[in-house]
Image 1 (cartoon, rainbow, N blue to C red):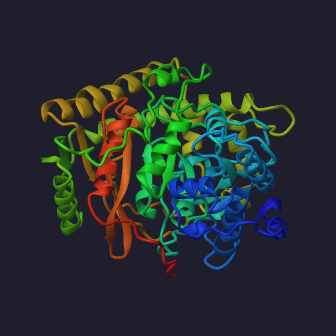
Image 2 (cartoon, rainbow, N blue to C red):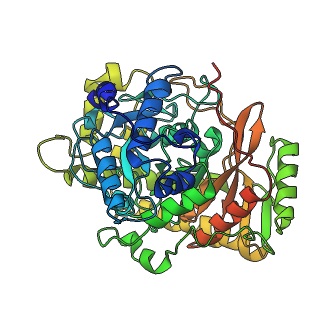
Image 3 (cartoon, rainbow, N blue to C red):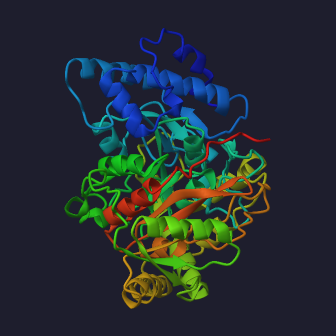
Length: 515
């Protein structure tokens, strides 16, 4: 437990000036923002309510281990935002709303950015990642950081999602022995347990959508290049992106509107300002009306659940057509993707480490991290090794012919011969299907036991938008429905997911913290 979390009781001592008519933890991000705006509660009261809930559920009771550290200035910032509101100054639609960040995203203040590794335990940079600066400009309060799969789950093939040396193993709020999936495990679990109004995750392949699906929340992976990746601990500049994880699609759209935009220091975002819109205003209950939707046929999916989702899509006005599960050679695409991730991990991590402010982190490249892990094997390598790191360290570089060939092949297979072809050949607007399997039991050091193939690979390697929305439960465990669109069709994907969400009763279930 961090020093900040040990000081939590001291942060809660002063009286709460206003009590919300609806408890903070029962509100969506949108409704909390409205409650604060109407004076039904305050930012200070909201921060205190979430801090109390974190102490009760994350540090005590079920002990989810979803939150890795807290912002010691959160209450001070909340009071400042309340003062600004009373004076008529509003920063934006998120004014005074508490948000949790995945702990590979830098935020100014006395918080480390560790990526879950003890090698970065002193990585207090004093910088806001551009996406964080944008959230703050919209009025958000950074409440703290969430646990994650260490190094975003790329250290070992035998890694267990949700475990890090800094934060331990994150537990699934719906069933504590079950896994939380993907590297944004803490963001998914924290959102499901309502430890903040919204959370931010990052994805290289499935690390937003899988934990969102498995924890029963909404998760959106934007088009790569819509949100800056600067000051985010990297894996791959080809596939990395940050995105919102929330309880509703509207909440995700509000957060994305704040996060999106061009960054001159991230060339992938050069088109972002021209492409971004107000994603919340673009939502429509008619967002599926007249759209041709390709429904992926998967083995092992609960037939009743998929049938119900199909009916709901059609009720909302969609034309649903069946699609095969294997539109491309996933083996060949997977090999190309892995080559890209290995080469870019080595290069991009070195660039990140060498760009850190001096004096805090001595490590300058992947080789240094490998050596640190070996020297601290009792903590870092207690449950699984670092063979993927060691494989990446052998990569030749970003000018290597084999790497460049892999980039070309992955782009061709995922776009021209993958999603673009599926959209064109079937005259589709979007592709939908079950995001992934329900959660499996966490077994440290034995890897993750996916029962179904994930839908994340094609949109991840193509860099296209991918939304997952709760669609029900299988044996008491949540599963999500994916909406996948073409490049820069983020607004269309979100609006379709919103229309599905609004087409009937809520399919999101509250966690029971079952032991």
